[in-house]
Amino acid sequence: MAKDNKFDKVINIKNRKASFQFEFVDTYVAGMVLKGTEIKSIREAKVSLTEAFCIFLDGELYVRQMHISPYSMAASYNHVAIRDRKLLLNKKELDKLETKSQEKGLTIIPVRIFINDRGMAKMEIALGRGKKTQDKRQDLKEKDAKREIQRMAFD
Image (cartoon, rainbow, N blue to C red; front, top):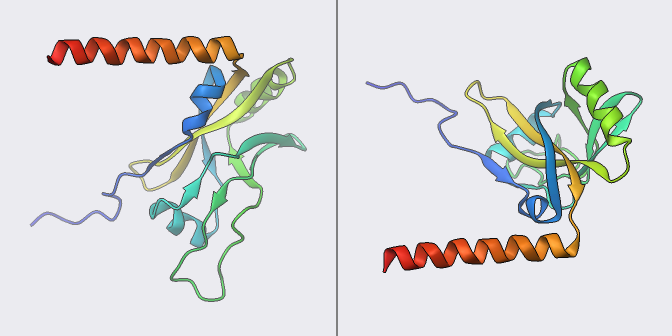
């Protein structure tokens, strides 16, 4: 008999607005410092990244405004839904991100949360530059053109 793996459910929570509002310059995968009920809520996919952003405090990277819903089965030891959560990167990556984020127009955005094959929650973050309105319109035109080409191919 096959052994049941408790990590079989694929968790892939994306920040859909991020790719529309930002042009990604560089991406990183970071670990997160979480409490027990937070990881359980992430496994239930009860996370929102729409308002989240990353900041540096005392040389460490934190994600702010990420909403993780309280775990429904927890009684009194539940977590706070919105709080600063520390991201884990090595020192070289932190230094590189901090210097680049000081440049004008660059910001650090959480792109997605996933659970790796070892059961650890990871966050993909991107160093991004805000798009202007004409860039957004151009992206929409390209998406429409691709969609039209696929529609023609299936007909």
